[in-house]
Amino acid sequence: MNVSKDSAVEIRNQILNQYYENIYQNYLFGGGIQGYGISYFENQVEKFWKKQQPERVLEIGGGNGEHLRFVRYVPTIKYVSLDLRPMLTTAHVNEISEEFKLKLNFIQGSAESLPFENCSFDRVFTTCLLHHVDDVLAVLLEVRRVTEVGGEIAFLFPTDPGLLNQIVKRLVSFRRIMKLTDVKPQLLYALDHKNHTQGIMELIKLVYQLDDLDFKYRPFPFFRSWNFNLLVVAKIVKR
Image (cartoon, rainbow, N blue to C red):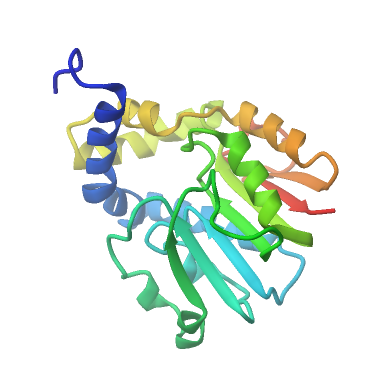
């Protein structure tokens, strides 16, 4: 790769497209400690829902449907999974019930400009999306716009570049990535995780200052610090 001639967009896309097409699934869902961690990660967002029977659910950054098998409450009307990239596999869809499949709709689109009317959903959530987007503020505003009053919102994101996060990366994540690609894991994260945890949290506080907002920390909830945890869940009820 000639970094002196290629544009920033070309460099980022070339590396990240290869990562998501050839490495991502094996890296995150190949079993072992990493697989256990992802299962724990995905379960957390479902743990904090207050309403057990949603009607219209929007998952932003749904990818290939990795979160679907963790959904505890199938909506009565529809479940929309939106992602910027087209689906590469339907393997995860095959793991859910036929009832759930009938209500499932995959849409390709941008989180920064959601293709939905105001107040279209009573539950909206993301898992590990906000570190990746170009404009976090735009995403947060769009999510609030498409959520009805009284609707629930959740943003789950890793604590990158927190202290505990970096320790786990060096002990587990980086080693696994290095078995799958010659691209340095530090470079992958530098390109893919554009946004800092503290900055994300401050923007959430700004956009949802009039709503019911609480930050949950895991795996050590008694440490209300992102530096000493691996993930944060922002739980919101729109007012």
